[in-house]
Amino acid sequence: MKSKNSLFKILVIITLIIVALIIVFVVVNNNNSDSNQGTTSEKQLSIDGQPTLGEPDAPVTVVEFGDFKCPACKVWGIDILPKLVSDYVETGKVKFAFINVLFHEEESKLGSLAAESVYQQNPDAYWDFHKALFKAQPSENHDSEWITIEKVLEIANGVPNIDTDKLKTTIENNSKMDELNKDTELVTNFDIQVTPTIMVNGMKIEDPYDYDAIKKAIESALEKN
Image (cartoon, rainbow, N blue to C red; front, side, top):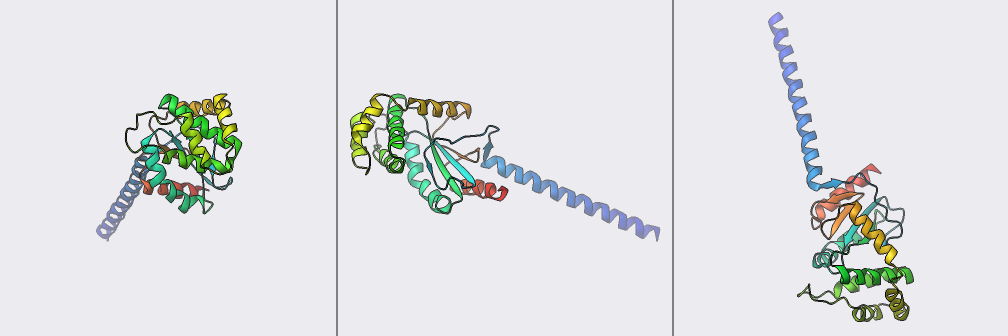
């Protein structure tokens, strides 16, 4: 009888050990999955005053740190952004914001000044101008000068409800430099090294072109709300 009880106790202990090992494996595997997805900043990313798509009270915020001179940003805007808008922005789950990065110096600055000036003048025209400016980016010779005041005004002239004379004056007066300086401060504070950098509720996505990773981060954020 004692022998049977001892055997039973041993089986129970072995079972408990196996269950504990399974739990440890699941926890470690989930942590590894999250770390592969991206890293979360301890700082709070504010999008106050930034151009934003979607419902203001959407529970999840997706931010692109982008540069109008950056070819990779153009590709992201063509391949990924429409999916994000269709799946999450238009359904009220996500609001999407764009923060200017000036990695290409004067042309980046001019493109960003133009975009911010359009946003100040007519927020409803901003995203059409945003798309048109990226569309105008040449497919080859990316380093050649193409963002000029003449090109910016030509693009703006093709977008409804933009006063190009007012836009020209605003750009020439550097009236929106405070907005660019605010963006540059965010770039520094959040250690943005490459464009595009995509953040979902403060978490940097490891690969901005991995839409499944973006979706996973959004769904995880939605579950927490």
